[in-house]
Image (cartoon, rainbow, N blue to C red):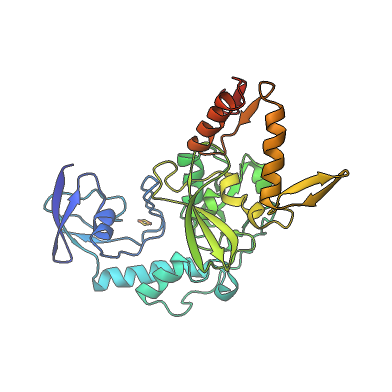
Length: 342
Ligand code: FES
């Protein structure tokens, strides 16, 4: 891995070749406000908040689009940068709903972070008059374009990462918004409800329904299919209230499908079996584990050689290995199959 050396705010920084100035600064612990940059997406340069001064370059380039170069001298803070960023944030706020306390992204909102950092404390420009309808058609998340800052992260992740392209920028100029083909409700579009747009949205424009703050997050592996995506389950008390893709997992690097992200309610569902049931006189009745295992062992013994096992991609490799071993070694048959063999 080749490295380059540059100076940011008077500090000598070593950065990986190919990093942008923003990535080099953030990796060195230097915060530059940013709203549209994302490590999983191509540079976009929409919000302009990440502007910096670079010796030898005219104007205020967006650091998320400028490759870090050997010997570069960068300033991330100056009176001109501060004034310009304050104006940029004020313009965004002029076209943004101001019900922060009622917003699901309150305290998790990058616009709040940026406004606090650049020192915007009140509305400077008159509030825009455009009011857009809220799209509540998806069962898992809500689109409220009154809170959109047009950073394009939702559009880009849907296109660049998911390869779906269900949403895009529609209209032009002041009327620009994020929408679907023919401006149909999101549920009638190509959308697969993976929720990647919701996960990437830095503000309250796309929010999960019924969002609650977790009290802790638990690292685990998704139980739906054999891919093995890394999950961070959001837990409150002993209840799972949301699922998030684990960026540290080499399998999915933070991405999830609709089942992994939103299909967690079975964990706490009231119909879920937690005790074994034995059918007695035609009625299922609760039993102890010893009783249930004894009954299963007795019945299996009666069927040695006349048996077939169907394994599951939801099980671990080890569980599947044990099942085929049991089928061949104990049940004396090779009738074993797996739903993933195709
Ligand atoms: Fe660089 Fe938005 S983060 S322009």
